[in-house]
Amino acid sequence: MPHLFDHLSEVEEKIRKSNLALFLDYDGTLVPFKDNPEDAVPTDALIKTLRELSKRFFVSIVSGRMLKDLKSMLNIGGLSFVGLHGMEIEDNGEYFIWEGAKNVKPILNMVKDEIFSNFNKDGIYIEDKGFTLALHYRSFKGDTGVIKDKFDEILREYKELEVVQGSKVLEVRPKGWNKGKAVKMLLKDKMFPIYIGDDTTDEDAFIYLKDTGITVLVSDKERDTNAKFYLRDQREVILFLNWMLKL
Image (spheres, helix red, strand yellow):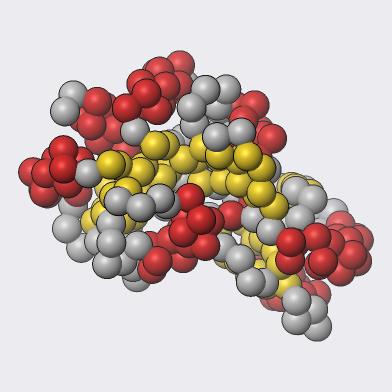
């Protein structure tokens, strides 16, 4: 897969000719992962970069985090926010939540009790996001395979839910919605999309934009992906964003 920096002339041509829409994942893309997600805060330099980008382009932060948490960390006027892997969207003062998430909430509450009772262990942090539930095991010192197997076993009978594997996190969410569908909602006519993300949940957006935009995986390891290009880490992402501001 080609490195994005080797194709900047192609990107520049698209940016200059188009009404650009920039979609950015948060954790692992704009900021490094932390053992406690609350510690993954943006730097002042990142805030400044995003603020300047939002003055020139449509910029949307697309994350698995709750929308209210994204807005609290990135208090920047002009940004669009997509939370819970697409289930929550706030753009230009309008709020959307996927109706299917509300319908599945009672089932998710049943699963929540079971997960909390089975995973009360050192090094495991369970994050209740309302319409999804994330089990973070970045600090867990034991056999992570046992954690994954038990998690899958609990969720096996709940056909309305699905498990998504992220970076040292297992997340249960309602089936039927994803980041790709959220991007589809936000894209307006004649917008040219650039999507940058590191997570497996970003693959839905990569697939949706496969023939219509520039998609960038953030990873220093080779892996199967539907993205066209890659950047190695958050440092390279910030370098690219600042390069865009110089155009």
